[in-house]
Amino acid sequence: MIWTRVIFFLCAVAVTFVGLASRRYQAALPEFVGEYAGDTLWALMLFLLVSTLLTGRTTMSRATISSVLAFVVEISQLYHAPWIDNIRNTTLGGMILGFGFLWTDVVCYTAGIIIGALAECGLRRTLHRKA
Image 1 (tube, rainbow, N blue to C red):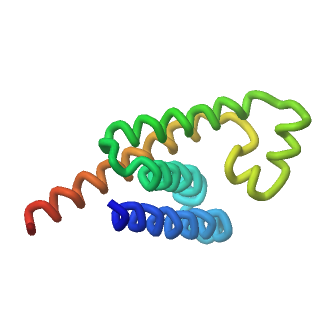
Image 2: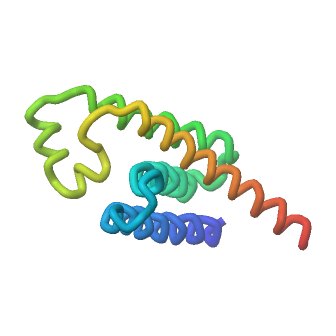
Image 3: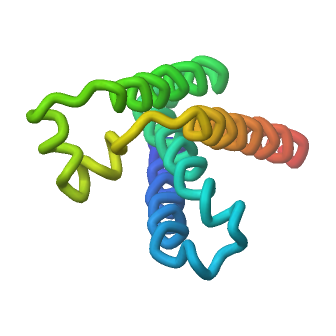
């Protein structure tokens, strides 16, 4: 189980770098990809981090937990008090909590988590067939 955790964590780190690059080089990407890749990859990273912590749970339960966390973060963006906006104004706080509620973010989060869950299921099937 330790190797599974390590793999999930390393994938989360890799996805984080790709997500940051998608923001940094947004203008160089096709418009649709540049607009939505960061949020989709953020949710995929969240799924991978939840999977790192809860490796023994089913893929569906980890996807559900990740979705709830992502939706709570998005809904929290409707709340604006000085203390939480001060956190959002930091680099890390802004990356984690975001700034303003958008329905498109909910769609991106759903897509990112589904991509992660389907990739895991596909990889497990492939590895199971080879064993």
